Length: 186
Image (cartoon, rainbow, N blue to C red; front, top):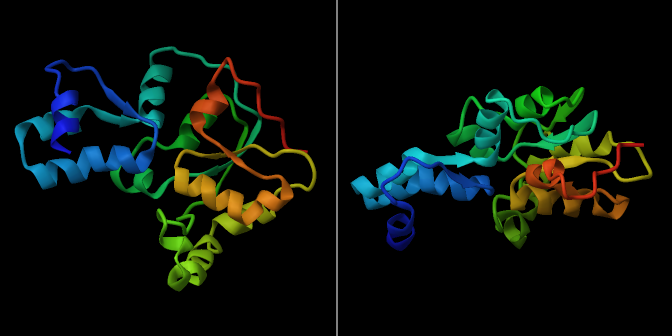
């Protein structure tokens, strides 16, 4: 942790944009608490999720390729808990998605927690509160655009619906102008 902070504490005000929400939350919240240094606090003040950074860019006039009209979204728990006020749902709508169906709740995986034998049923029960119903509502056939910025969330989506051809893309992949555009839901 201290080495990471030393590398990121550059003395400038450039944002530190982190694409994995759990890593961003660790740098924003956990590292300053654990290290207790001024350097850790300076770095924490500059940390943004990709959603936060893109929200700022959109406010300044940035326009990426338009997202699909309909997106299913699993927001990472750390995005809710640590980075309030800047939601992927709001950004996707601002960028032109007409319908964003958000699974408002935890995916249930929580790192490797959900794959541990003693927690597996709990993981599925938590996913059943919001994520599984959203995935079950997806139309059959074709590839449906499901966005999940967290690796755990994307893994859980693959576990729950991969047999139906459903997989998650990261917001960066969705908005990358060089990437093949995701197919619209059937």
